[in-house]
Image (cartoon, rainbow, N blue to C red; front, top):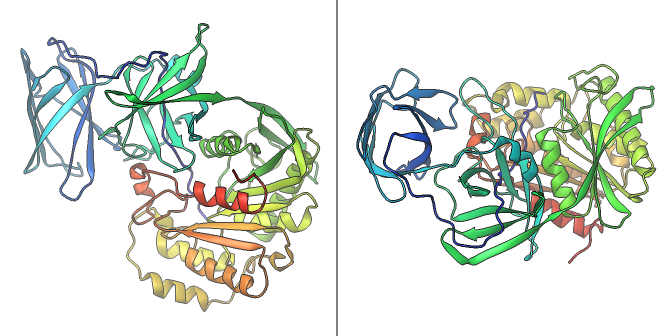
Length: 513
């Protein structure tokens, strides 16, 4: 199974100013064009076109988010306060021709932009330069007085030949709604929130401003509606610890882990996070956002470098054959055993969590361990490896828009004789509460047939199992129209937070407010 590497995930913040005056975009002085400017328009189908223009010494470069390509504005002309440019597209460009004519106003560069044959009134606003040295200071979990909790994380650089899959700088994620967007600098310490994972335009009305103490340490943030100081809400930073740890698997291989723990009084419930088929690391973006979610609920999270990856011993293998699944399950058992020795962890509230290939691993580990009290599986198959392989072959794992009949494919899977890892070994013997979360447009795992198989077990008496099918969820449980990998940059949110929180409360893992 090919597992998609990008999680969830979630929007960026950036701001730090303790004043509470209304936010406005800085006024623009008419002079040589300079800096990065944001604009765009909404197409007739309701989708946004997000444009970034970088002006430097009379030259300009256009970027169309989320594409990796940039276009030189060779025909850029500035005459006093007026600006014009024409751009002719080439084969495979997302446009045939772009023409802009505009003038400086009090707050930006406003005018008419013609995209192919359609004209739009557009205003570009100048973005403030981001101080990269400050970005890491903003990383953290923040709780508002209302109880709303948000995550701010540094974005990695990840792209294919055509698209970026993370915004530049920071990701801002609402840990209740799942809204996950990039942050774009407007003033010192003040940021606008983009409209989707990698799209800036149109910026949300909400602005984020970080606050600092006299020593320059970030203490919290403020959220407000642009130019409306009356609608301001403050958030305090949640303290937590991150510790490098090691634990030893049954064959003697030493695994390198990262334990993220609340700094409130314990002992706390804890999860160990398992990887999919990818060579996962302990501090990947997906690991960090899940750690922030767990911290927001007072839960510790152990992540680790997969066997043979990073600082962990052993040999990495992608295969989902029985031998490799059993070996990874032993690593999971060792991790939960290690968690039970930690004084900040409640030994009676330890679980496993993970996605994709981990859907085969977690039940095997849970059957072997006396420490696993519950488990959560994201987008995990409840079919054999042969059935999953057939599904992925037909769908191409969502890496391209393949035409197929979904119902006929599901029917073919139902009629297959299981082979490889037949269904999930030992799943009938599990007594722990277990939650499966699937996206309805997953192109990597047959979610419909997996849910049917799990429902058969539930109907036969496995009342400790439950599942949620998230409408328009892709393999990473991002909101998606069709589940294609190329749709990830346009995802406005991650879908699973609410369902997971409800299940944690129902099973007594976290308190009900």
